[in-house]
Amino acid sequence: ARAIDVEPYIMQSVRKHREQILKEGFSFTGAEEELVNYINQRIFEIELVSGTTFNSVMREFCTNLVSYATAFLIVKRDVNKSSGRRTRLYGKTLDPIAAIYPLDPTTVSAATNRHGHVVKWKQTVVNSKGKNDTVIFEASDVIVATMDKKTGFIFGTPYILPTLDDVRSLRRLEEITEVIAHKHAFG
Image 1: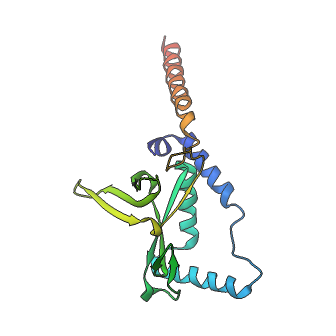
Image 2: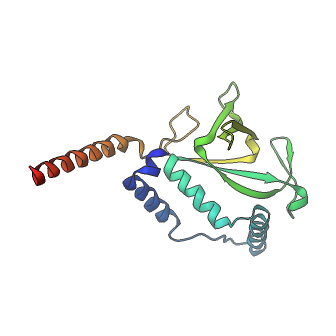
Image 3: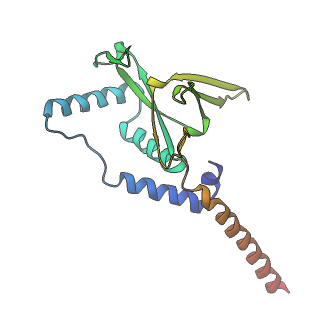
């Protein structure tokens, strides 16, 4: 995360990858027009409740997926703020989704069962007082996407990871070049 923030080469690479993913935009299409209309209506409702556009949520989701090879969406369920119906999933009745929010992957850890399946997600962030705030999310309220995930791992492996040493070497070469240029300019 720090390398993306401070290294223009890496930041530009992340931006270019994200824009390639999103360059064609997206839309919901299908054979059943009624179903497509329902999806568009639900997306509109989710935008109203969450206070952000679906497009910006997808943009941040893609940025996180490219940057960290893992991206999260948190779904907030509320039967009173949604026209959707309750649904059953794995023997559990779930309220309809009312809002969707992206989650910073650098603040997330997972609790797994004895089989290695995630049962809860935990987000820990430092608040304005310098103390940790922790929020626990049920696995059914988290949508996760990963890229280049190794077997047995929960998170993906960022494509940027192997390039970090190369970027450091490039920066050292720039510093050496600058020192040599100053030496010969004033020497």
